Amino acid sequence: MEQLLGLHAEGRDLTVINVCLRAVIVFMVTLVMARVADKRFLAKLSAFDVILGFLLASMMARAVNGSSSFGPTLVGGFVLVFLHRLFGTFAFHWDWFGRLVKGDSRIVIEQGHINRKALEKLHISEKDLIEEMHLNGNVDGVEEVRKATLERNGQISVIKEKHGS
Image 1 (cartoon, rainbow, N blue to C red):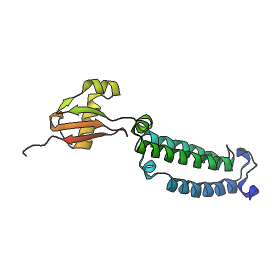
Image 2 (cartoon, rainbow, N blue to C red; image 1 turned 135 degrees about the vertical axis):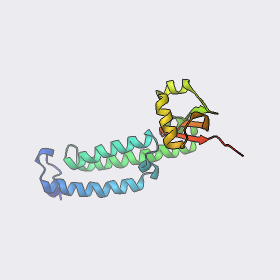
Image 3 (cartoon, helix red, strand yellow; image 1 turned 90 degrees about the vertical axis):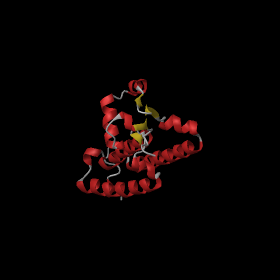
């Protein structure tokens, strides 16, 4: 098995067979990791989730191409997944921890008025805000928005003003 996977070979010395077998194993192991991880990780709901995706992809690539030790790299991937799950659990139980790892939402429009100070602080242009209103709120103008919030995942949610009730 050591020879088939090229476990003691340098990355540049791996054969096509070594890399293919490693890829199959890494694929199956990463699939298990994705099943163990919170489903939210796959939805990339916040930077907290995206970071796990980037790190996991980078680590698993190293296991395939031989730039890191095969077994320890796979174990490290599981450590990251369990750490993400643990932090997610802490964030669920303690709001302060959730704010620490995921951030806070910010109101950018309220009662048809743009909060320009918030936009400036968040480095969001008014044009970008209007685009998000069109895409996510299906509204033409700011006056049609009761509330727009930059959510923790980076998207802007829009609640329309109620008319004719």
